[in-house]
Image 1 (cartoon, protein in one colour):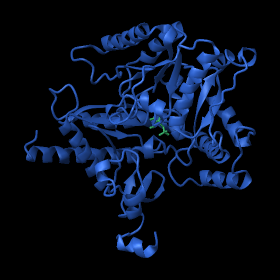
Image 2 (cartoon, rainbow, N blue to C red):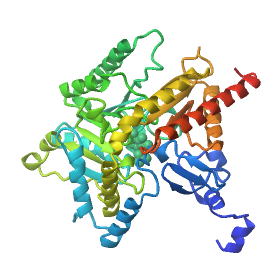
Image 3 (cartoon, protein in one colour):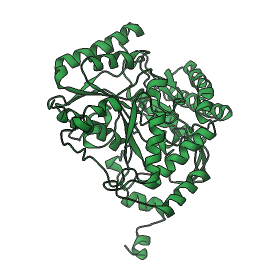
Image 4 (cartoon, rainbow, N blue to C red):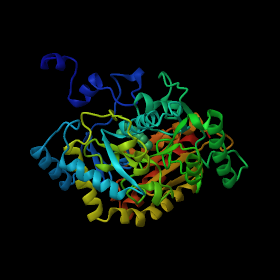
Length: 465
Ligand SMILES: Cc1ncc(COP(=O)(O)O)c(C=O)c1O
């Protein structure tokens, strides 16, 4: 389209271009061409600026990923240097130094005997590859029926055909073809929404028994994997009751079911450790998937780490002539891997994991203080992940439309006051860059608290509560 025609359409720059040509994730189709997402112009540290000149605290850490913050010279230099040294190689035939070194570093940081890394392009492709690996593994072992995947309601694992089908968030499912008799769901381990009158200990027993029954119903010989985030991030920062993962892992071990821990959100510092599976949730799974924080969002990269024990069963003299042909043009991309190595160096050098472990209790305490506000039903989190749940009608067992409207209005107020908060249904979710200070946490909680109070007063004045 030439410039004159663009001007006739009222083209004023990138926002018009986005409206006219860009399809975004979670696009509301009725508003296609009219949606008005803020345009970000630049960022530094924990702050981003929009095109109206607002300076905003990056409350959700981009999309759970901007661990070390924006505009870090070390990462930019590593990206530039690698781009000028070797910008690409085909991973089908050759290896490069950054990918090899990153695999070594990740194997060192991962728990137990998880020592082999397969690189992908992001989180969805990481989980998809882990699931395809499970299918491949059982085929090579001659257990061609052992393919069912057990997942949780409210879990999120990505946007490929298979990972979307394994994602249990209700609002992601309409109008997609996700039905599969290979995929089964069990309850979210959501203690806030547990049946009324049930103790937390009884709820944990219920969840474990539900998993055991699901395995029995499908037949253990047909179940290939349990796929679980250590805590359900996009489902609303749902932290399972203590001991949940360990008890489920025991059942997996009894039936030779692979435990795939989806650490796309939790790995690389979010919970104060390189990986959360063992250090926070006390399990060593068979496979861990990661993405996001591995490059602090500077470049796309994801991957999975597989245990020696699992690989040993289908490699070497046990390989039966097989080739694991799953792969991507950009598997082990040298520039992404160089960015990840520089990111790991910054996290280590600046003692960011220690900083998270020191700061997280304060963050949780401050988020927890919002529970005293009249329309806040629950506050929760772990590490630098937090969630505030709006509940306008305490008698309702599920979130209502008004709860979701309230959360959206709170998030809009926060934005106007200089804080980005991620709205998920009736929840306001936070996962700030890991370099956040106590003073900045006070600012976040101050803005969020004032916004909740303002919207509460408005709802009262409107006669809706
Ligand atoms: C736990 C989890 N797994 C997988 C994914 C998918 O990752 P990506 O969006 O990088 O494909 C996400 C994305 O938020 C996630 O939260």
